[in-house]
Image (cartoon, rainbow, N blue to C red):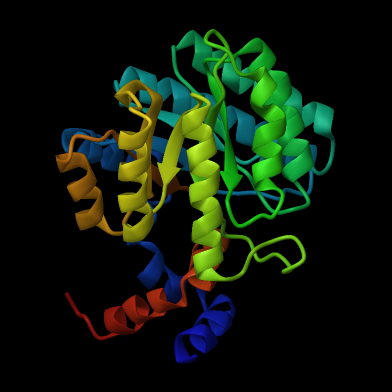
Length: 303
């Protein structure tokens, strides 16, 4: 209860105070920071996906600026031979302002990624965006099936049905590619599961369906129970290593990440960076209030 109380108050504190927590989970404010971290992870045998932080913009000028920044990120990442791809939040490209403009911006990014033989993952955002983001993915998948993917959040009550409804789009030449995570946005119980065990149960139900149908999947979790259950499902369905990877967040459970890699599984780390790190950090605190203990410890750590 104390951690939850502190987490609820932290967004009211000065940004420099929140940075004490954030620097553990964010590569930095600049692309150079992100590239440095990415190279370090690559040296450990870990792939990356880069995310320029920022979402829910108020003007289409911001959307254009965000697109140009991502084009620059793609160019630098390719030039420096980073083993990684890109994650984008459609709301930062105008999804809630003008869907067609958003589509054009993200299509340009996916086309550029395809020219580099790379890949763009469309992040799933809060419930106001879900239908729009599935529609966006379907349009892009029809044109760039090998170069675009989507995220699904297991805590949403609709997720299993959404995955089922996309199944007819899957084929050997046009594979579906999903990242499956638990979910982070605060949603009402009418549309999202709240109980930890219930969320895990539906995560595994979604994952098993994906594996049964041959989709590519990023198994995005730090939960040791889900990781062990995923191992069992991979073995049960004889899933080849070309059809899945594990995914984790930068700075979270690095020892667990290492153990997955040592078992021979592909691993990709989500590397967020940018000047708009504050909203990302405060959401992480709300998702896991226990993280507040790191801030309290950092206040007394002079090193």
